[in-house]
Image (cartoon, rainbow, N blue to C red):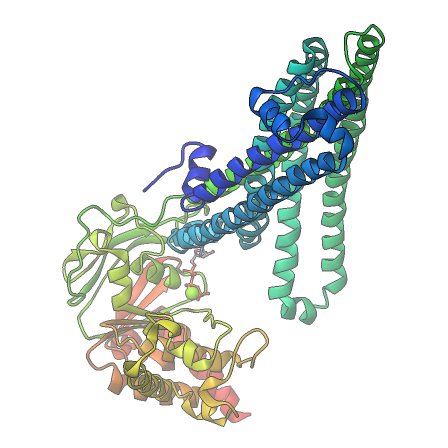
Amino acid sequence: MQKYDTKIQLIFHFLKGAKRFFVMSALCAAMVSLLDMLSPRIISFTVDCVIGSDEPAVPGAVRRFLDMAGGIPALRAQPLLIAAAVAFVGALAALFRYLFRSCNARGAERFVERMRNELFGHIMYLPYTWLSENSTGDIIQRCTSDVQTIKRFISEQMTSLVRTFILIIMALTFMARINGHVMLVSFAFIPIIVAYSLFFHNKIGSAFEKADIEEGKLSTIAQENLTGVRVVRAFGRETYERERFETQNTGYTYFWIRLIKLMSAYWSSGDILTGSQTLAVVCLGAYLCVNGKLSAGNYIALISYNGMLMWPVRTLGRVISEMSKAGISIERLRYIMNSEKEKNPENAVTPRIQGDLVFDHVSFTYENGSAEVLHDVNFTIREGQTVGILGGTGSGKSTLMYLLLRLYELPPENGKITIGGYNIADMEASHLRRNIGMVLQEPFLFSRTLSDNIGFALQNRLPEADKGAHSKSSLNVHMEKIRQAARIASIDDVIESFSEGYDTFVGERGMTLSGGQKQRAAIAQMLIRNTPFMIFDDSLSAVDAETDHKIRTALKEFLSSSTVLLISHRITTLMNADQIIVLEGGRIAESGTHQELLAKNGLYKKIFDLQAAGAEEIHAS
Ligand SMILES: Nc1ncnc2c1ncn2[C@@H]1O[C@H](COP(=O)(O)OP(=O)(O)OP(=O)(O)O)[C@@H](O)[C@H]1O
Ligand SMILES: [Mg+2]
């Protein structure tokens, strides 16, 4: 994987395809600066040679052009010619300014487009553990406001840095041609102003970093409250959450106020410095003028050039201070781009996923958790079997499945999981996952239509790319598969009862499904792939016993050749399984068929009796 050792390296990576626009815009900026330099020259020439009677000191080519047009007398007779020259230079500068801006904007948009695509593309392939360890609010902030900061840096600050550089060199050169002393006095202030701004930029940088961290926390609170709005309402925690937000917001505001105070101090004290620069140039120029060492026209030109210098030098301070923000933002993106993508082992194998599934002395501890979650778990599931996994909450059932899907990597010293003799750690992760269907314990549906959600695994291409005569028939085939999966998951009737059927939008701004409906939609979503291994992680917990039975009967027919893992708290859900594994505190307490386990008179029997007693109680009442 490509690593970005420096921020510059990352910037250059994002700049691919946009560089030529920025080079063009820099060239146009140089032209604009050059043309801007000409106006003070025309004015000084007018004052000294046209109004006054000095001999014009102009380059040979200009001199010849002037003579051809009738020389100075012609200009005195037709002062409009001077106005025309100024207008011409102005129009040319405007044209290059337009080209500069348009090249710059196109480069910036290309740059930011690539940046977003690269980030999203990278995040998609980061390990599940990375995504669960980093807060969503923070990741989103990096992909939005940090991206914007960098865009501004490249399209505004960087170009203004280049323009500033060109303008300073040109203005100083033009000044030096008129009077070296005045140029030196003006120039002497530049390093002072730049050093001064660098001093502030360090302070502003660290203040900005703190404000940015606070902003991340604030957006995490807001995001959590928006997604968890139901919990907040159900527990009546609006006031508490509002106060939590307000406290965080106060902290955030405090950091911004500190930042703004710093910036204000910088800008106002900077004013004193640039004011001193102007004062020095004005005084020295006046002195030279009075002593006949400088003409009035050249004095005006020098003041104009110095005025032109002031703006870019001030901008240099701003650009440098902004650069520190961009530097932090680039660092934040570098963190994402340098995070290791999910790795496949070298020479990863892609065998047919078939045969027995073996958990061989598997122990596991979550990286952020202190205690071991699974202790020496050992079992074999024969191909085509249906196996039930029963256990109390937190006993490690879901963890077993996450390990099977390699959402968490099992360190080699902690045992191994094999399918058909192949260690899953040696397989290509995507191949493994393509062959193991899993209904997650907490199903998630996208804000799309029901058919899009159920047919999620069928969508290999975007609809736009799927045009043509072929698409209609493939769409029908897809629809048929979607319906079949929905029928097995017993959600077909429910969907048909919606006015828009399979086109019903779910999720935000759409229809809200009940917990059981969501679970069934998730089952249908998984069934569509017809994988050799299928896992149902507590997937029937939210459906009533009758629907549970109906789904299991339909599944039995459909899944006859697949190896099925049924995780449940409810014995009725898994009592017909070929084998039942009972987990307790991350250990296998016992295993066997329903009858065998009952005969053992152990934990399973205890749970069975409790559940049976519960059912009888309900029956009796
Ligand atoms: N991402 C994680 N990081 C740290 N610890 C975790 C993580 N996920 C789960 N655990 C811990 O691992 C243990 C087993 O969790 P697991 O989700 O496997 O239980 P479970 O048997 O599926 O429970 P349930 O029946 O409630 O779904 C729990 O103690 C839990 O706190
Ligand atoms: Mg679980």
